[in-house]
Length: 424
Ligand SMILES: Cc1ncc(COP(=O)(O)O)c(C=O)c1O
Image (cartoon, rainbow, N blue to C red; front, side, top):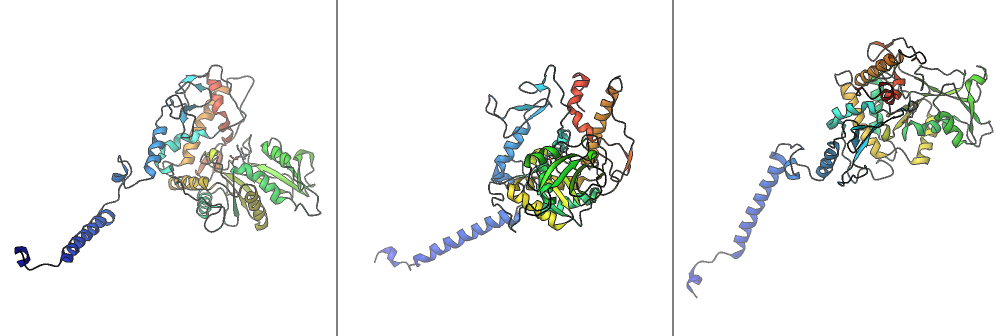
């Protein structure tokens, strides 16, 4: 036996066990510190480890980098835009501006007064960049349906209902809500839903509108031309009593003349397009309560590119037919769009009647444009603008002029002002 052999021997397993225990203890302390004791962290540090975020950081950086591209206030770069010479998304210039940074006025730019674009609300969303941003993961709602088997976000529907109630522009409690890819898709979905069944013996429904009307009512009806309905021209050709079997399109406020219209054919099934029935475009005398109403996100928030519209429908059978139409044609509105619009509606709701109220913002911009146009046109001997008396608006609790038409004069400004004034 050697000297070492003389020492009382400790069993070898005991040391390993002690090492294992201390390692476990250290790990437990580390995890407790990381998940329980550390304060919540905020985005904005340089790498994922300091912000508490990991996979969303790169997307956030890309979004902020493209937002910072300088387009002289006359355009914007987008993440999915065409890459410029440096490989990064290049500026896309607004009408009448050109050059790599949109700083040049296009010579002899022709104004297009026949169509509009709700970009007047873009500055609002820049001001609310943080609240209006949404992160979409690579695995966000990949399924055709949502978990409960439907194509519509229950949460978004609930928030849209809250928005109508808070603004006071529509009665929602007794209505079904059907989403579409913009209200443009729902134009035909509603004609289909209100027409007799294609197999029924009844004659085809006759679809009409009063002049001047929003052109897609005619072009869509004529294009789809189902067996169960047909475009039948304007209401002027009908007597007020010959209303059987008619579907009448009514825009209220009307595009193009802003008037709050009502159906003229007594007893016809009416599709009342309320796209502009929001306080930055018109006064709101009372909540709208027609059997079939059409709304869109394109007008209240300005997100025309996201393509979300909805119909409010009293009758369950009609709503079911409209829902089936959307289901058969596109299997429901895009889930990415629904997520984004949920965020947007939440921002609008959170700021109602506050100093960042989107409707007060929009009304202000539109009012300024309308006054500028009126001042220019008042000097002309040949053209004039429509006179509109102020009406009481329940949302602003004040008199208000309808200015929906001025959405379409954005580009006219350039023409009238000869490029001398900047946009306000
Ligand atoms: C009266 C009216 N209804 C419907 C629409 C279509 O809106 P959306 O963007 O939802 O298709 C417009 C668009 O300008 C409109 O003026």
